Length: 394
Image (cartoon, rainbow, N blue to C red; front, top):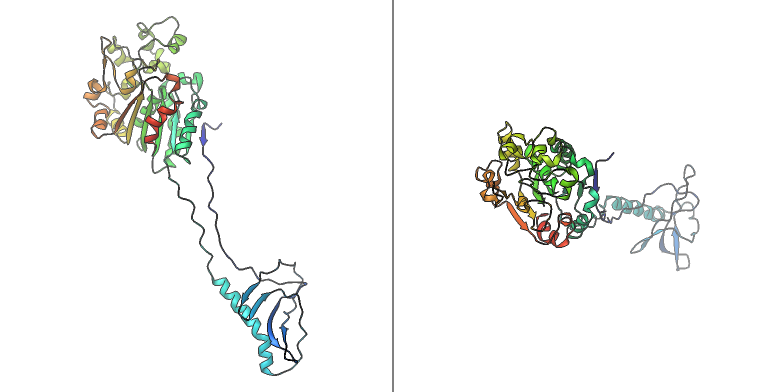
């Protein structure tokens, strides 16, 4: 099964113009004649014709040759047959009868040597980097049809790939398993785009993409657009949470999520309880690792890989209704008193544990907060697209 859905608007081919001489071959049935005006016995002009040699064998008739006119010379099929030449005669008369044939051979030789006219240049069109889209929890590629429409309107010809992996309930699979699957799908797309690609990653998909940037040594991501993603974790009672764990509240969900069994669910991989920070650091098999909050052998290499990104675009807003706190989309999060600390106050920023501080210092982080957008509408809101996404799709 094709595990990715690619959208490529049809391209207009360039129309080529060229002039090439017709091919001469044996002609059966009709005679190819070369006629010149010469005086007759009575002083009036009459055509003098030189019939071609009879072909050695019959060949299928060719279409009529185009008439080419030169001063005193016409090449084409004559509808009138001149009288047969008299046998004998002077050498001058014989040369006069053969002279037109020499002209024909010379003319065709010159035409064959003429180069074809160059093809008309195709209209210049801006070349945009390919876009790869990663969906979120319980999502599928169909959810992004409006986003595809917007990109095609503003950046026609852009190759957009919405990865059709871990759809629906499969999005509850452990995030490291999803990272491996998405990496296998993304790597060939990057290899085909040496100029770089853009990532648009929504909700839970934003964490998948950040992990991809960490583990892929040779990624070529220009813009990583994190669309309402809980980059610093999730701590809130939502409809998703109530459906998954109907008997649990956010205050006691740590008992499930910080167990080996709970870490088999994607949402527990980024569950961040500010009241049980020690349990989070010890039990989190995903978020604590990509944040560099817990030591591991790959920390230095992951940080180096993450810093290969050209630009990090963070998008979110206060009316999201799912990401809690909503500032998590901008690397803000609760302290132990449930007071939100902004990105610059977070320990992972101050220690620059995975490169966040370095990115900000080089001007590579763009923050785009927008009010009035619910969580499920981020990828279909045209104003949001024009303001926060379009400017970074180079």
